[in-house]
Figure 1 (tube, rainbow, N blue to C red):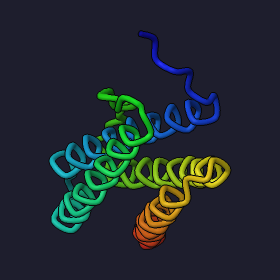
Figure 2: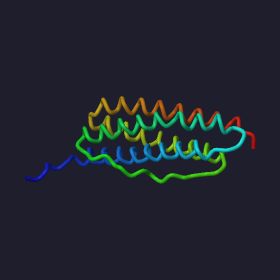
Figure 3: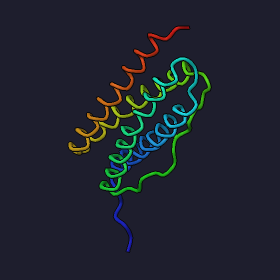
Figure 4: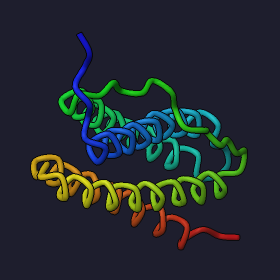
Length: 148
């Protein structure tokens, strides 16, 4: 018995969600590593900040994995590449770049979900977009206060 062919647009959405999932896994690894690696005068504040991001990223990964399965796909188990830095400012700059990239992916994914009539997913992606926007705003504010 062969499996029925999946709508190409649905497959594209699942593939995109798997890409997003791999970046959420990478975010967990990045923030965990940064929390351990960070040094200097802002160590305690930055360690708490990085550790505080991990539960949000794990929740995003859970939602994405569950949705991929609900759509008939198989969730990825591979993280996207993780960039490690020894300088705290570079960690924050990289985290901000990652958050901005994630926002762009989620905005694209939201459009794909809505085009396919996956309105519940679109609303869930709105929540992720709001979360990632807050993360990016906080990182931008932290960098704005940074002494060079």
